[in-house]
Image 1: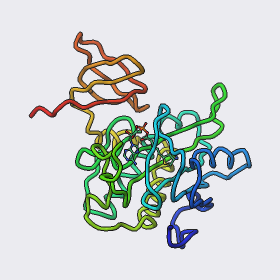
Image 2: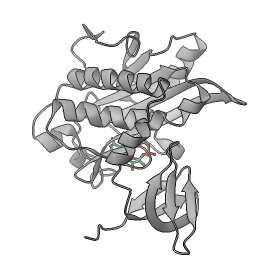
Image 3: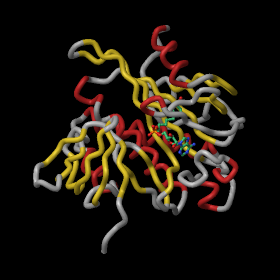
Image 4: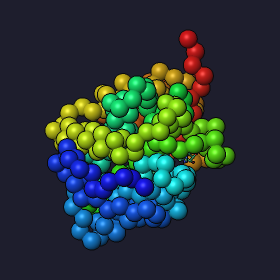
Amino acid sequence: MYSTYPIDDLRTRFIGQKTLYYPVTSSTMDVAKQAIRDGAREGTIIIADYQTSGRGRLGRKWITSPDDSILLSIILYPEMEDLRLLNMVAALAVAQSIEKLTDLKPILKWPNDVLIEGKKVSGALIESDVQGEQANSAIVGIGLNVNLDPSSMPEISETATSLKEMLGRDVSRLNILESLLCEFEELCQALRHGEPIHKEWQRRLDTIGREVSVKQGNEVLEGYAESVDKDGNLLLRCPDGTLATIIAGDVTLKAKSY
Ligand code: BT5
């Protein structure tokens, strides 16, 4: 269990100022959807100690054991043009909050993974309600492995890590959460003021300048990850010299050549 809720003295204006907290729920995304239907205000967060059906993108699972992770959904009512940038906000907020509180050096993997020493410590899932050209709402879901022990979880033991595993000590979920919410709000404000947050995101992306394979459904594209555009799409230089714009997919990095 988190020790205290709500967070005392949370230094944000709107993110996390209203919290719905569950020891166990199916998925904080589902709770957030219902909260939107019930008229939740912007910045409302849903946090859980455990999810019975935690989800990732494309129907994949998000796996944790009880009380060891940050499992968070944030409700936003964004402008349409900001919607596609929320994955950047989520990944940057996670990376910056880890950096503020530890000496770890997280890096980002396109589109929204946060890695430490090549292993995934956090992922983000954005679910939105869009009608025509209008974004009605968005839910930013963030899973962050704080004290998780990946070695006890065969499905992710090879690919996942946690702050505890990297630091060799327990880490306060509450401290990380508080920092994460502050970073998230600052980035939201930057986005609203039209600041180019994609530049900082791109700077931290390990994917750029690497040979990669991109899986989109059953199709696999190979090429050189040249850069990202301001909407966060990956620009892939294909072997025939053409430039492909990748909007969604899973990237596998090939070994670094020095
Ligand atoms: C993501 O999906 O990385 C988005 C994860 C979002 C989870 C949060 S938790 C709060 C909120 N409520 C939810 O129900 N979801 C959100 P994706 O890129 O599809 O990655 C999923 C893949 O990551 C899985 O197929 C596993 O390989 C791996 N994975 C699963 N659990 C993991 C964990 N705890 N740590 C690291 N990797 C994990």
